[in-house]
Image 1 (tube, rainbow, N blue to C red):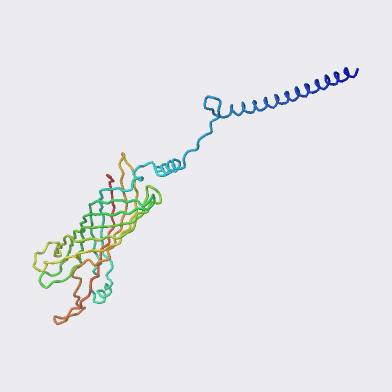
Image 2 (cartoon, helix red, strand yellow; image 1 turned 180 degrees about the vertical axis):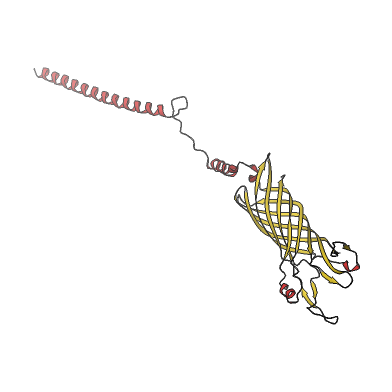
Length: 306
C-alpha cells in the first residue's frame, strides 16, 4: 500500500514538471517570434547587403563637402572669369582735360592778368595693358601700363601789339607719357566695381605751338609767335574710377569712367613775368609761379583676353 502511494506521488510530480516545462517553452517561443518580427520590420526599412544584413549609410567626407561648397560659391556668378586669380586685358581710354591748382592765381588778378588756368581745354587718348590680381572675391589689385597722349589748348582774348594792332592768340600744348597706374578695385557684386589708387607717369616728349590771328581771323606769321615750352619729366597723380565687367559672345569686357588728378606741376619752367597795370618801359615785371596741374576725365574700355 505504501509503495502504491509513492508511485502515485512520483507520477503527479512528473506531470507537473512536464507541464511547467511546456509552459516555459511556449513563452520562449513567443519571445523568439516577437524578436523575429522586429528584425524583419527593421530589415524592411533599411538597405541590406543582399544577404539580409543591414548596411549603414556612409557620411560624405568633410573635405569633399567643403570643396563642393567652395566650387558652388565661386561659380555663383555663372562666369568663370571671376574664378581666376589673374586676368589680363587691352585697355583704351579717351576723354577730356583741363587745368587746376594754381594757388597764385589771385596774384594774376591783382595785376590784372589772365588766370593761367582759365580757358584751357583739351583731349586725351591712351592705349595699353592692364591686369587684375584677385585677392579674394571682392578685392583685387589692378596694375597697368599704357601710353597716353594729352592735348591742351587756350585761346586768349584780343590784345594790342604796336605793329599788328589787336590780335588773338591760340596756344597749344602736346604731352606724350608712359603711365603706370596701380589701383585697388572693390567688387561689391561680381559685375560692378569701384577703384582708387595712384599713377606714376614719365614724359616721353612734349611740344607746343602758338598762333596769332588779326581781327579778320587771318593768321599772322611773325618771329614773335615762336614759343618754346616743355612739361615736367615726371607726374604723380591720384586715380579714381567706377565701372562694370560684363560678358558678350563668350568674351569679357570692362566699361567705366575714370578721373586722373595730377599732383605735379605741368610746366617745367613755371615762372611767369607779370607787368602791373599802367607800367612803363622801365617797369620791372613781377615773377609769379604758375603751379597749374592737369585733370582728366576718361571713358575706359577693356577687353579681357586672359
